[in-house]
Amino acid sequence: MNAVSHAVTEPARLSDTGPTQRPSGRQPGPGGSGSSVEASRETRPPKVRAEVRNLSFYYGQNRALKDINIPIADRQVTALIGPSGCGKSTFLRCFNRMHDLQVGTRYEGSITLYPENVDLVGRDIDPIEVRMRIGMVFQKANPFPKSIFENVAYGLRLRGMTRRSLLAEEVEQALRGAALWEEVGDRLHESAMALSGGQMQRLCIARALATKPEILLCDEPTSALDPIATAKIEELISTLRAQVTVLIVTHNMQQAARISDYTAFMYLGELIEFGQAGRIFTNPAKKATEDYITGRYG
Amino acid sequence: MENADLSHHIVSRFNEDLERARGNVLRMGGLVESQLALALRALLDGDLAAGNEVVRCEYEVNALQVSIDDECNRILATRAPTASDLRLVVAIIKTVTDMERIGDEAEKVGYIGSHHSNLDHAPEHYRVMRHLGSEVQGMVRDALDCFARLDAATALAVAKRDRLVDEEYEAVQRQCITFMIEDPRTIRRAIDLLWIARALERIGDHAKNICEYVIYMVHGKDIRHTSLKDVEKQLQAEPRPPAVLSATERPQ
Image: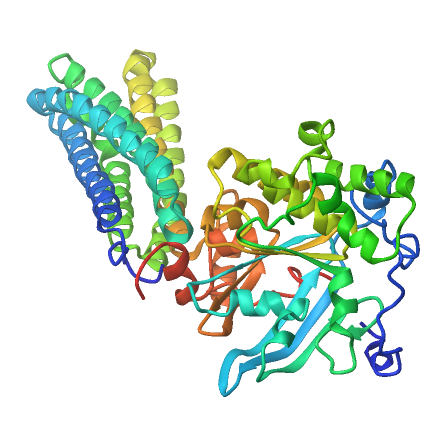
């Protein structure tokens, strides 16, 4: 954080995205035998992976986010909670520049990604490059109408990986990382559309993990799933925490309490309260937070 | 949880569940309080009927404890309470345990009191217990009031009074030892006195526990096993946790 001043002088392009050329000091991705060793090297308290500063976001004249300031802890789960329309998803989507395709939207402030000190919402950053490093999983599983293998390999092919053996290896690693390998390992070339809802969602997580993102954004990833599939995804997210920073939007209060390390409560586009999940759910400081998580009308 | 706002849940049955549980705790508190009063009357006035009444109340208190625990289990399973609601339910579960034990101790006092009232142990022999008894009775009453009103400040003051009860207990102990040394024929009575004093002292401890749960409910701070002086400082220094990450909470 002491190198903030370097941010402007950094090359505008995010650092190279080849899977084998990750910045050092960080495990390349999910799965793999070395990941736990790498993760255990990390000492507590967690480092800040990204810092959101005075972030405001406009849909035309409508200011959907108002001066948000949050540190995102490295390899921890940060949950965003709040009533519908409070800006959680809008906030999440800022991280991978999903708003850019919509006309009339505008960012203010910054989301600084460490250790490179790049501003994710800076004008001179290529959104495609941002999305390569920040994966996203949506509320509804959206696999491509292709085989399971091709779904996961898609992002890797986009990056120019063509060697079949290498692809197969990466796909297996991603599927293992998403706790799906045991279930689909023997039918990789069947259509992904034939999977169950929970499996599809884990496939989407595997697809996101294949390109070895540094941050994984999850927008209500379990809201369309049954309790068993939900439990599997929650378990998966807790395991993923060893390798990737997770930012999750959820409407399920118990889910946020169970899986998150840090929780942010948003209301009407503002950040009301942010803190360790244990404290937010047992002893929130703000009445608005209290009313929301206890299910009161304020 | 600055005020006793159990209502205003979007799910109105949740309001009712919490209100019912809390109402039952207050009812149980009332019963335990009268149990203690009856026990002291049995002891100090040699009132045999009062002693029997203490024992009868015990069944009612036990039944209430079981039903409140059931209610809390159901709330935890079906409503998954958070924040102040969670603290309320946790505090209720703990409070009823302490209240039930207050009832048990009162029963002991009542039993000894009524058992000996018609023997040669004239009730005036138990007069040394009067001060200890009224002090403990006051603590229980005030602790239950604090619970009803969610009054953390008073709860802290009441918890502090436990030290007085302990001192009083020490005094009774010394007095009993003196009796025994002076006249070995009083040993039997002195042992009874010690049992009673011990029971009353334990009731004071349980009342103190209830005060601690009240502070936990209101401030979200677990102050068990902390010196009350430190607690006072903490509560004054930081009445509420910060709304954003404190320095110790923030990732580095």
